[in-house]
Image (cartoon, rainbow, N blue to C red; front, top):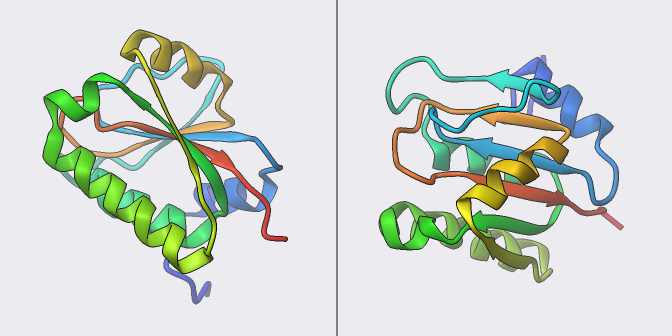
Length: 139
C-alpha cells in the first residue's frame, strides 16, 4: 500500500507521468471539463472532497512551478482564494522555491483547461474555486 497521502490510483498515475510544464487543473463541482481531457472525478457530494483538501494532497505529491487562477476568484470567493494562496505560500516556504501566479479571465481559464493533462473534479461548491497547476521539476 502507498504510504503517501495520495491513495487515488488515477491521481498517482497522473503525478508519476507528468513532465515539466504539463498542466493539471483542480476544480470545483461546476467547472465544465473539455471532452478531450482526462477527468478524474472525486466529487461525492456537495463539499466532499473540498477544493483545499484536494490541493493540499496534490501539493504533497507533485512538484509545481506556477499556478493559474481566474481573476474572478478573489472577488467572488475571497476566503477560498486566500486559503489557496496560503497553501501556495506554505509550499513555497517548504520547498524554498517561488511559484508564478497568473490571473486570467474565467472564460480564458475554461479554455485553458483544454490543455491540461487532466482535470481533477472535487465536490467543492464555492464559485471559481479552480486552479491550474504548472508542473515543475524536483531537481
